[in-house]
Amino acid sequence: MTERPPHRTPNRRLAALIAEAGFSNAGLARRVDQLGIEHGLDLRYDKTSVTRWLRGQQPRGTTPALIAEVFTRKLGRRLSAQDLGLDACAPVYAGLEFAGTPTEAVDIVSGLWRKDSGSHVELRKIAFTPAGLVVPSRDWLIGRPDERVARGELGPDGTGRVPLQGRITVPRQRRTDHVDRVGGARVTAGDIAALRSVGELFRALDHAYGGGHARQALVRYLEHEAEPMLRGTYGEATGRKLFAAAADLTRLAGWTSYDIVAHGLAQRYFVQALRLAQAAGDRAYGSYVLVTMSRQAVYLGHGREAVQLARVAQQGVGAAAPPAVLALLHAAEARGHGLMGEVRACTAALSRSERALECARPGDETPHWARFFDEAQLADELAHCHRDLRQFRAAAQHAERSLELRAPGFARSRLFCRVVLATSRLALGELEQACSLGAEAALQAADMRSVRAHEYVAEFERRLEPYRDAAPVRGYRDRVAALG
Image (cartoon, rainbow, N blue to C red; front, side, top):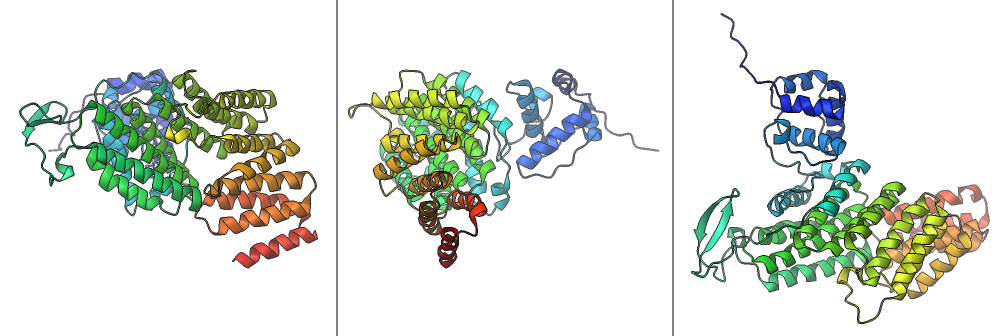
């Protein structure tokens, strides 16, 4: 007697959403496969796979989360696996999800830290996706603040109530000095101060030696120190500060990943930093994360997305932000316009940035992360924009001013600006000076673990190619060859 296959209920929710999105079965399968590639997965679904899902078969692993992300991107609203009639599963470890709750945000970002601190080299190969910028930035802009981030607060009787699976709670003894933080130790002001200090240390290393110098140590610190704190015990005020510090370190992990051109990984760090900033209740820092994402988009040639991210940041933080913050946001928009050759829009955004910075005063409450945006940084932004607009004389003037004002500790920024100056001198016909500046930049890059620094130099060398037989260029190549 032949055994019948188990009865399955047709998935009407999935069918309705397929119809709403206008997908064919093959089209949905193709999108899931493409999204899998972004996450380092080789899935190979086809229209027959979708037919099985519609008949009630449950896809395995992280596939339900990927399917939900496909519909989220297409329909412009947050959808979960359960909304599609699929079984819940763990978030995609390198996902672009903007978590619904602070607890979910901790689960997603800690999974990312753990994977990145191990031997999962495929994480560094994940592709950057411009479409993945839309939903997180929109959710940040229109999302409501988290009402509560406190976790396991101690009651008046000295016991704590630690949430488990959302609703069930169990009592816990008051912390002693030697309680393991993984078990829910209380987070102190000293813990948060330590996170801040570590952030400043890694930031200085990044500026001076490149993102590849200590990136892995930063990620391990997040895994072994920040995650236990986020899963510890804290009240509302401490919790907000903790999420703010974690957001800052996570953004920095993304920035250092960006500097070694692990662009897909960096993008995911930025999205998670944005969500942690929301849990912190810090709109201004969220705008800074969006500006960071905008800069990455510029670097990868996505000018339109860069402008949109900068404008979302401006809208989200409002006109009451400190002048240095506003200057930073307008400069980021200008870079996007410059990349696209939009002269009037770029000039207008630069003017807004200059006016905002002129309003800055020493006594302003400028956030620590925005203090780098000074006259030297503004001159750097102007130089990059004028270079992109092929206004090379202006670009050279601003690059020279930035190099005069910029502190030596910002070695990588100085290198980038020197290459902009070299490029501008080359375009102005000053070949010997351009080669001299380019050789200085190449010498700096040789001492840095920054792929971006090497790419800046390589781009300058491509511009030298039409002059390859000229004596200054031969001299440049000889100097660079000696570095090897």
